[in-house]
Length: 207
Image 1 (cartoon, helix red, strand yellow):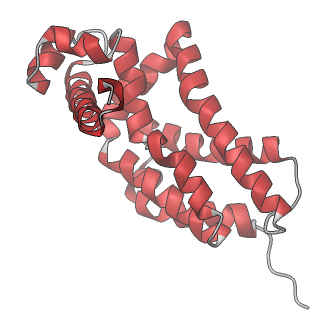
Image 2 (image 1 turned 60 degrees about the vertical axis):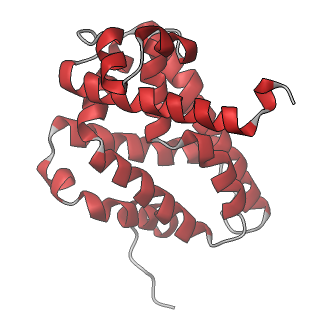
């Protein structure tokens, strides 16, 4: 069996990659993206500096890797496929809860890396293409499938997905900016988002 197909080697490579990403997240959170060096990241990961470049071409690649890991992008496609078997509102509430929970735990890391994405055009483009656009396509396919199953209203799927994403991103921005209500009630936000998406804000009408 070729080495590239060896499952043990693949698992070891994935573990090493995750080890480096975790170390980069710690160093970026402590020193910021520009002040951090690959030598410091290697030291934090317990590997040689050259090993980093076996997995990542640059610090920018590490930045994208951190964001992808935070959002659990590796499993999102499978998660959405499996979710078609369950209740759509419960799935969205669980997905919001999981990812907002990660943000709550990794707030310092996000604060260190996200501004870099926003102010540097090349990083911003990569962030959009490799993270935002990819997530959008997966969600569009999921919502379209739910529309065809008669479980979601047949609105413009493309705009619907982006509206939901914008609420999520808006909450993240408010948290970064220090909104006390958002920060103190972060654990409640997943259910609020799910309720807004599926129930709206209009008062219930009497029959």
